[in-house]
Image (cartoon, rainbow, N blue to C red; front, top):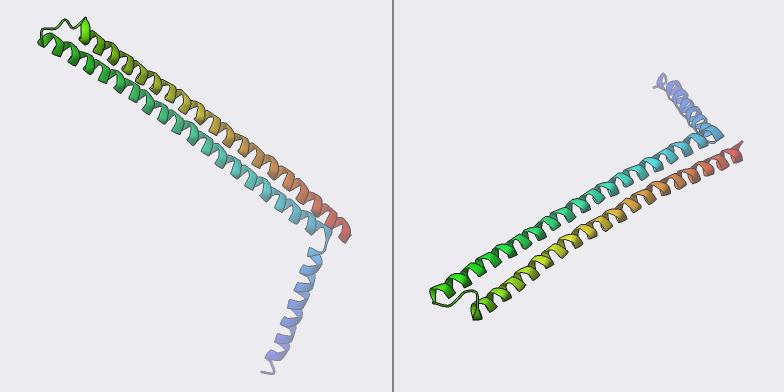
Length: 172
C-alpha cells in the first residue's frame, strides 16, 4: 500500500492540473469563439433540415391535390357514363312501350337526365380545379415556412456568433 500512495497522489495532482488547464482553455476567447461558431453551424444545419422537411410537405400537398383532382375527374366520367345509361334506358323503354322517344314525356325525361348529368360533370370539374388550387396554396404555405425557417436559422447563428465574440472580448 505504501507503494501505491505516491502513485495515487501523483494521479490526483495530474487530474487537478488537467481540470485547471481545461478550465483555463474554456475561459479563453478562442474557445468561446469556436464554441459559438459550432453552435451557429448547428443552427444553420437545423434550419436547412427544417426547410427540407417543409419542401417535402409541399411536394406531398401538391401530390395529394393532383390525386384528389383525378378522383373528381373520375366522378365526372362516372356521371357521364350514368347519363348515357339513363338515356339509353329512357329511349329503349319508351320505344318498347310504343311511345316516340323524341317527344312527350320521354323527351322530357331525357332533357332532365341531360341537365342532371351535365350539372354533376360540371361540379366534378369545379371540385378538381379547387383541389388543385388548394394544393398549390398549401404547398406555397409550406415553402414560405421553409424559407422562414432557413432565414431564422441564419439570424440565430449570427446572434450566437455575436454573443460568442462579445464573451471572448470580455475574457481577454
